[in-house]
Length: 239
Length: 239
DNA sequence: TAGTGGTCTAGACCACCCC
DNA sequence: GGGTGGTCTAGACCACTAT
Image (spheres, each protein chain N blue to C red):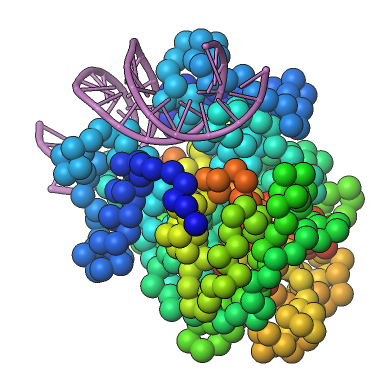
């Protein structure tokens, strides 16, 4: 299990820094963040870099920026930031999402007629497959089935993912980052399996997403099929 | 009805240019766009500016960029780009969306207990309210109810919005742009009204969004409540 | 008018992909 | 090795908000 790259860009360090400060309560919802010029001095860098960092914070919905006024910490009450339609990040906001493993990681061939196109390279490597349910305050909210290209990731098979962030695990163990991707979204009726896992009556409407995430390792792609009960929470996206 | 600002930034002109070229078929799905350095020469500008333009194209899902390889026109088959969860744009991709007015524009007071917080300034100005259904190939797909702050927008009341893009209308008539906003997304059951307008059985699952869009005129805010039949199409988002 | 974000220049070096 | 995108510098000027 090797670390696969090196330097963390300055702007990502700044993103992580500001995220942490917001999480720690140094800045509360509605607070104005330091100005871009202040940040330039603080981090000894230039505005292009600072703006790149703040752009990322905006894109994950943590911050809003107003011309002539400043950048402000934004509200995300009841929003499933972790799924932020636009977000590349796990764990935006302070929602206490817990994870239950429904099906442990297993090494399989890629399914026939898989929804997304999988390249030949990935097909040869096979996929690691597992399913999880996410709960919020004890209630199941999300059911997610995940497929990851097995490029030297066998360690997954003996890893207990319970209550672990997949993205953090990939980052910490393999230095693999999410670089981007695409999502498709539908409203559907829960089928028997989904209804059971999310404690819903069958035919309850649920939000369904199919996602394809690209990582910093071009041999590792992540696909996930996801069902979300939006009765008490909603997906949130700001831009 | 006055034009409200002046200069169009270079990067936006480039965005519009490339969009137009893709729409015209100069670049097809999967084609590689010119490199960033080529664009620098072509537009006599620098990479920061070119990248700002391409970032916008990526964010609306039109383009994907790969390190070391280039930027490519991306596929958006069956995707409602017009609603692209992340999109700020009208009319990416499928141009065959037609609009039917369900309720003509009317000048009202802001509703009590409106879902979003409306500032005092906006409350004093009142709101312009109308409802539309969007159809694709003759089938109703989206029902959208819109509220806009009436800051010198009375011309709306005598405008026929049938088959017009709201965003283009705001842009062309008032030079008002969409600058950003937020969206909240649920899966719900169609109620009687929505079912009727979208030709669905009641209790059919539909995607529901509540959106708050900021414009380049800080006195003009747009809110929209929207229901979408995702049986044949899906919302699409790339990042 | 002072302070903020919005846009832009003219370079540079690095990391990645492909031949 | 040559071309691509990824990151960054050290400035500049403009547009918007507030006072």
